[in-house]
Picture 1 (cartoon, rainbow over the protein chains, first blue to last red):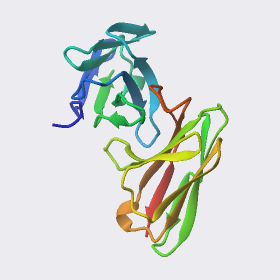
Picture 2 (cartoon, rainbow over the protein chains, first blue to last red):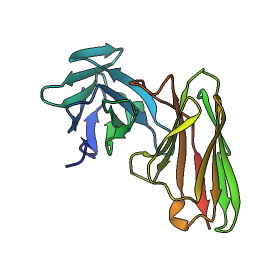
Picture 3 (cartoon, rainbow over the protein chains, first blue to last red):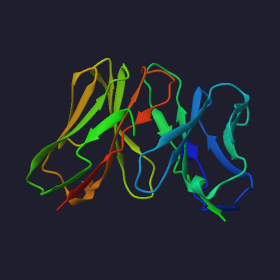
Length: 112
Length: 113
């Protein structure tokens, strides 16, 4: 079982819809969770970070964390074509050594 | 524009060449990272420097040699690379080695002939 799992997609949604991206992780000791957006040929860009159970909202983005079920999700409201990118889930393990683990990423396509 | 600057943006080198990738940040971050990313794959961690000391080496071949001259700079020295080493090399930094998000540079696109 991979440590951080994401559906590779592509996830295709119409403009204006809600895009829902999901990520599961295997290490119950994981403490911090991040969503990065990566456009083709570009570097990852931090979108959201979340550390405790529940929802965290920032503009059109909402991150949701459920540690009991070991999943973290990202909702994008009012999706725009410019949101089309690969979304990477990253999970930080517990412990003194910071070892971030990335999921394979989900490709999102927002069509007009 | 990113706050982590990587140079060069593109590099083409032969298998016998020696070259270096450079990374610089002025955010006062004390943790810096090198990643390798192949097309349609997630970033793959190579090295972590924490407070200018190498804290993690993810079993990277010795043809890759990292160096952290000071808290703002991170180099990756390359020698005798193989064609399969062609990839996007990403540098990242974070405030510390704890549970904090990383800021990525734009990367160096490396091609080995």
